[in-house]
Image (cartoon, rainbow, N blue to C red; front, side):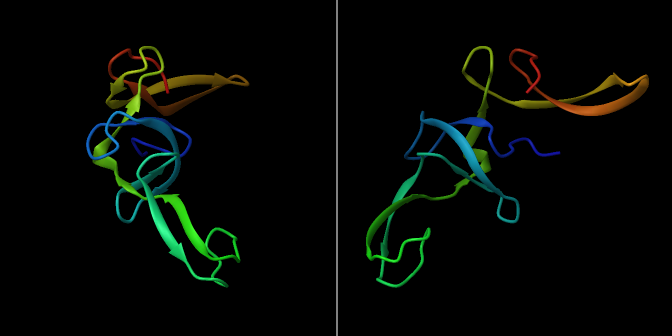
Length: 113
């Protein structure tokens, strides 16, 4: 199980976009990087005819660049501050069957994510 997953709210803790928050759009597991919505924006020059993000017109395009996962922290759902992620096992009873599952929780508040 990963610490940071898609659709998590994260805050950037270092780098040029420090302090900005956003939703994780994509997690790149091979390089340990994440793409966060509206964070680490870069400009890309696109030639006419190239299909970058579905456009066929040329020009300068701004897009999100990947950030290393160590430079972002999960936002605590209670206090809205950066927190670390912990794992614990919980027993869930569903339709009379007991099942143990691994659950992520915020270390600051102890709340389930």
